[in-house]
Image 1: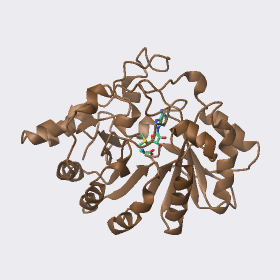
Image 2: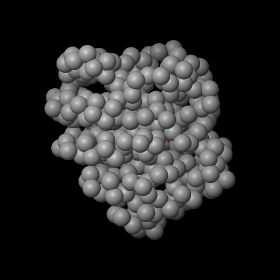
Image 3: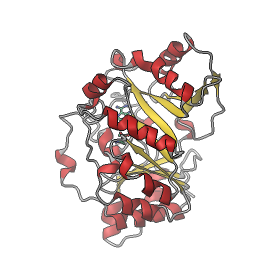
Length: 327
Ligand code: SAM
């Protein structure tokens, strides 16, 4: 079992299978991303992903989420999904949805039933201005395809002040007739993503907007939930808020992250990484390294709550962006 100094059991692994993406969302994959440092990094092969994942599973991991970059752009993703599906874990994926139609059968065969799709606007033009790509119709069609095939669909919306905060109610309206589970995510700072505290639309602000039009009920949270969940009575779907910035949820954290070049992070905001891939290639036992990485986990926000840079405009000290870390 992977337990840290604060008695938190870590049984959830998020694997980024690529740091490439077919969209260019301003908040995630900015143009001046420090690509140089990672462009030539060795990437885990499908076999290495399976071998590293197997060590995590033996150590107690019960859930694996495939993420990226955009996982569906990796050519051998179907093989990776098939390999991971052999483990006794809940398998899930986070995607921008553009290529979902090519993977529906693979997901079904692998028993992968939960798909998170990122979609920050329900307006085609705004979607384009955020992602810099004209893929809105395709993503909407693919969300419908997932619903038709009875997948559990969560829609991730990064809420940014004066960008899409005026669409919150439209997303709630969408949950009326469709079993869509919308998750509003507070805008987080990452290297070069032009974050500033003024652009954060907080948990409280989101709830105030919704409360002005709807009566809603809080759902019971589970220990490891990052999202605070709610539902509007009579709506088929639900909504939730991921309040990393205003109300961090570190006390119940059970997450570990693996980048596509095989580095383990014990927190999304950790500054230190553990090189599992190089050690695997050298034939070293990586299990003690995983244990050590978990033991070194800070109590909150990768230790950044005490760091002078946390919450300030300058986030340049963070080397990796969301596109490297997989969200
Ligand atoms: N390409 C996939 C996708 O679009 O979902 C998976 C990777 S993406 C990094 C994972 C999640 O991180 C997405 O839901 C995205 O919206 C979120 N994300 C990226 N940058 C963010 C930021 N600065 N603040 C909050 N969420 C962010």
